[in-house]
Every structure is written in structure tokens, then in C-alpha cells.
Image (cartoon, rainbow, N blue to C red; front, side, top):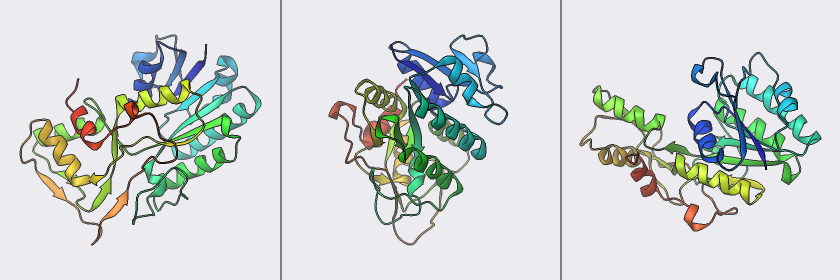
Length: 271
């Protein structure tokens, strides 16, 4: 049986992955030192990436698949991932790295596909690119890069933020001329499960197959949640439409695992 270690398993994406995979694989996770509910769980290990080296945990646990859903200090994450790369090169192990659409945020005129050149103007995007570039130098069987757009779902931080802002009478910041795609957490976990089962290699864009304006997406979700005419703060950062979308093309998943923007909207109210 595959032994899977999920880094950041106490976070939103990492915890959803743990719940999806734990019934099928020998699955473990890490949690940050302030995530108290996990301290008594023998499948979870405390890990402080700013103070500890991940190598010790890897040598003791000997995972065959590492999934990185880490968040936090960028420099600490880079150090951790370079330690992981050293480990997987010396062992029968691969890394599934959860990246972001922001690796393309310097390109504004078109959506991005799996093997397009990355270029970012943001600190976050450049940090993600640094780790991606290190992985792309490895043999194909040693990694997957999984790029995500905005992730929604009934209990997702993004949906909870929409609810909270509306209920407290605060404006939701929207971008009417930003064209995006999106996804929802249950489909993401199913897609990564498929990638593991089928031993897929390379780069995957796990976003919807269609596009929408970010303003329209947020408004549709709010209305689906039952909020009519929510207070919106419209932010125009360009005179023209600009794209921040990661579309799948080269590494398409089966149709039953693909997703549309309307699927994402509907997921916001499915408990």
C-alpha cells in the first residue's frame, strides 16, 4: 500500500485531501504547532517549517508519495521543498506540489495552459515559480505540479468570507475586468486521487474548463447562497479585460472529473 504524507494537512486543502485519501492509502499529515486538535492523532505530526528540517520526518516515516499543501513563510517553504527534493532523488518517492494560477500573473492577454512559460509580477507567484522550476529539472516520475485557480466549496474560506462580509454589511471586493476560472475542493481531492491511482506524471491544471469574470463569479455565488443585491466594491485595475486563469489542455482528466464554473457555483451551498 502506498504511504502518503500530506504536508499542511491541518489546512483547508490539505485536510480535505487527507479525508479523501485516508480510506484508500496509509495516509499521514503534518500540522502546525498551533493546531491543537491534531496533537492526539497518531497519523498527524507537528511540524514547524521555520524551526525544523523536514528530512528527519521523511527518514522516519519513509513515505512513497508526498503532497505539499504547505502555507506560511516563503523562505521556510523553499528550504523545506529543497530538502524534499533531495529526499525523493535518493528514495522511491515522488512529490505532488500544489501550486497556483499566480505563476502566470504577469500574462494578462490570454489564459494559461500546462506547459506555457511561467512569469509573475507578484512575490507569491515568483516564490511558487522557484519551487516549480526546481521540480521541472527532475525526472518526470518524481513529481506532479498541480496548479489551482481560486478554490471554493460550501465550507471554504472564500465562501465563508463572502457570507461574513454580507452578514456584517461589509463590501465584497470584486474585479469586473478580470477573467478567471475556478474550482471546488471536493473535485480537487478527487482529481488528485485519480492522479495518484493512475500514476500520472507532469503538470496539471485543475480548474474549470470555462471562464467567467471574477465579478460575475462572486455575484453568482452570493445569489446562490440566498443573498440578493450584496454590497460590492468594484475595483478596476485595467481598462481592458485581463486573464488570470489556468485551463487544462495537455493533461486532460476524464469527463466525470472535469468541472465547470456553474459546478463551482452550485458547490457553495452543498454541505
